[in-house]
Image 1 (cartoon, helix red, strand yellow):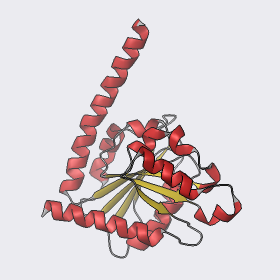
Image 2 (cartoon, helix red, strand yellow):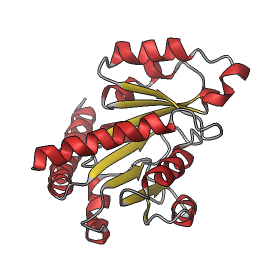
Image 3 (spheres, one colour):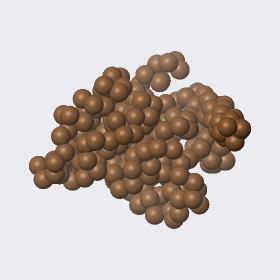
Image 4 (spheres, one colour):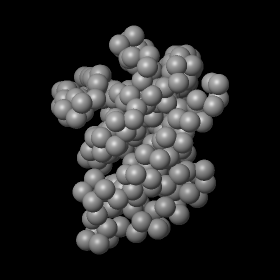
Length: 225
């Protein structure tokens, strides 16, 4: 019992410290007019590919940057750089999620004139949900090959997000994934979720998602005016 109490106190201290740093990051970003979005999902759900498609759509009109979180390698950051966007790699060396203090260490490298800053979290639907990174928006992604039973299994990721993106929607005709059912289940958990179905192959849903992001950026600009 004593051990359990100590573990809870330590976790509360970690989360409290993280929240304080995240709040500082969020204020700095929003004061600069930068809309930050934190992307959560399991490995292989298509976070990097979605960011490539969004980046290509937005980069002619806006300044877009990406922070890539991975346990090892800079492979995803290299992919983002290849489409002409700046990318900063955070390698956790085993940690299953990003923390606000990790972003704080590279904050000075982020240009003040960015419009959008996307944060690709470590592939995991559990730990990242507990750690605020100072984002304005949180996305939870679920790909069709993963199955449609995830919202109830990983509720915190859906409760703490504002956007739910179903990825690899081009595979819906070929796999036993009920998009309507999973959408309804996600909305039962969090009725405020904005829901998008996307496909990097066909381009489905990419334009509406970009329009949503532009709308949220405009709201931030109005707030700062």
